[in-house]
Length: 109
Image 1 (cartoon, rainbow, N blue to C red):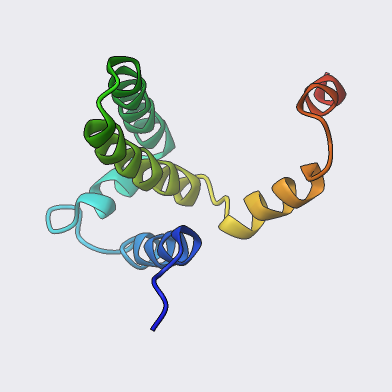
Image 2 (cartoon, helix red, strand yellow):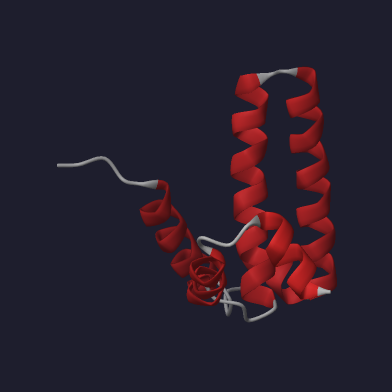
């Protein structure tokens, strides 16, 4: 059996996050974040992103891998809270394929 790709894992993780939406906040960390609302989810995502940046600057590969996992999880929670799906993000990425980063950024204004 082939190993899971990162995409496979993210799809399953997003499904788990969505499934926890109605769970009791006292029994699920994910449910507690979603119940706290999008601002709390965004704050937690930002905290994790800073921790990943610090690990990167320090050159700690193991810590960066750990923090990146936290960033991806909290990004998916933020997306779920804001009702942005993986398909929404994929559509944007597909649209940007073959477009220079400078051109894409300039087009956004």
